[in-house]
Length: 298
Image 1 (cartoon, one colour):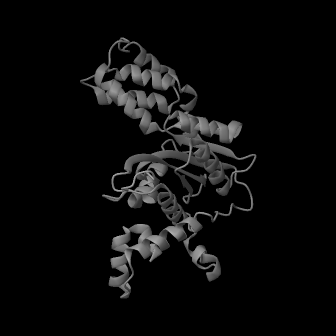
Image 2 (cartoon, helix red, strand yellow):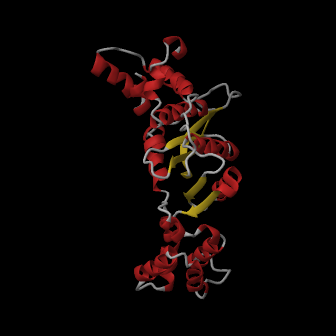
Image 3 (cartoon, one colour):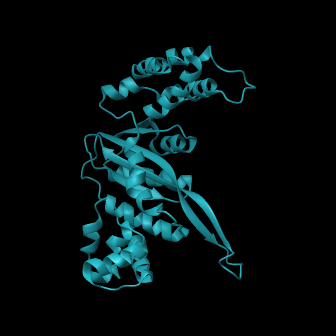
């Protein structure tokens, strides 16, 4: 029942119980059991390897999920509802040569997400001497938390394809008839860690400050403020990823496939419990959870 509830709407999960097992259960019971076990499952931790690893790859990103806030002051709760979008922050970490990441997710603050990020890296084997390779977009909260959590151990790289989007926008202005070729030339320079040449190619075409639509100025500013995060040649030479596709696909696999179902809105505590359920399964804790003594499951 909880397995169905982790993947489908609670109504569909109840129907599945009847179709697959001939057992009739109420939607309310499916919801209650799924969320209760999700909250308990979220307390389980991935055990780190016995020895710290030399290099950990880690990523962090956010996606928006629908949340409903109910006013306790409103006599009619149907009218006291506020529908908002909240950022669910997902992080992952893995040993450099591994293909199995450890996930973490929270609706908490940036600081809470940062602490979870460090804990996730430690669960993947990060120790005091581990090199931590971070990759993702240039959002200030992400880069700030990476610096605070990993310090001198960490080196952060801007997602190459995110940077390429900025270059594509600039290319349409600088070389409208040969935009693809211009973008590819700049990408080649970035892959050789020659960001200064890319900045020079942009600088002579920067739009006036008063111009609202300014893709060249935007691209130049974005890169110029993040030159220390553009060592793609170094990352490739070390066999490290230059894109953050893992965490982006993780958004769909871990979060969105369940928490962004059509017409689905969540109370925040329930969303946190479902995040715990989904992350626990993604971290391969499902079997160990259900093998625990029954007294610890209730």
